[in-house]
Amino acid sequence: MEENNYWVEFWKTNQVIYRESAHEKVGRTIKGVPIRDEDWRIVLQDLEASMELNSEDDVLDVAAGSGVISVPFSKKARSVTAVDISPPLLAEIDKIGGVETILADAREIEFEEGRFSKIVLYFALQHFSEKETVLLFGKMWRWLKPGGILYIGDIPDAARKFSFFNTADRQAAYFRSIRDDSPIIGYWFTRDFMEKLGSYTGFSSCSSLDQPSEYINAHYRFDAKFVK
Ligand SMILES: C[S@@+](CC[C@H](N)C(=O)[O-])C[C@H]1O[C@@H](n2cnc3c(N)ncnc32)[C@H](O)[C@@H]1O
Image 1 (cartoon, helix red, strand yellow):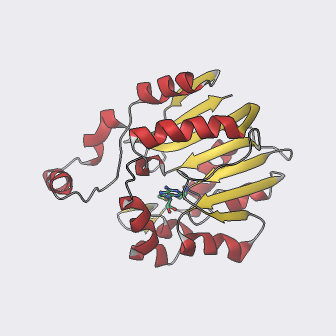
Image 2 (spheres, helix red, strand yellow; image 1 turned 180 degrees about the vertical axis):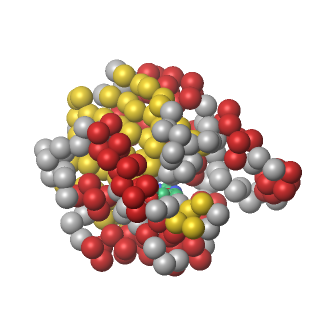
């Protein structure tokens, strides 16, 4: 497979990972200011409800970053496993503990069939090409128990790309980024692509979901939920 390692290099070397707070380290900021704790708490509560998180769950957090989902989930689930390619980000999770961290590329790692009851991949699908996403879906489907839930959060919406690149300056930066092979967000997906990929992979229920309008990225990202 032709490997695209632009984002792997980015998340190992970009200075963003050494910023102050867990959210800043993964770029969850608005005009440079990290999301407020109370706003993130609402996202987490919604995510727990959508994923029907419970004390019997073995959760896999793919591209877990600094652990802003893994760590709180570990207090509610039986186990949480966090996979990421960035050593400094995983070290943030290890400082707190309670989560099994695995330094690995999600495109390469394998787990046994049915190992997890829930899988979350949040604010990270933009780093996977369409081909990598198709392959990853096949693997995540196998890793889930029957009835298990896969939740993909914060997917860049191809239909609303220019709600993000919404000024002449931002559009200029966007087109320069294409010209210079230095992507700004990464890959963009349509809601149809996600739903149809879910069905193709074998999920029995596949829905793309609007984010509540108060979410910081609701104007250009959506979520998707799949049940095995
Ligand atoms: C924007 S951050 C989101 C982190 C976390 N999911 C969150 O919501 O806070 C994207 C993460 O994807 C990780 N990542 C990118 N490509 C990856 C890959 N191929 N395998 C594993 N992790 C990857 C990066 O290291 C980074 O931590």
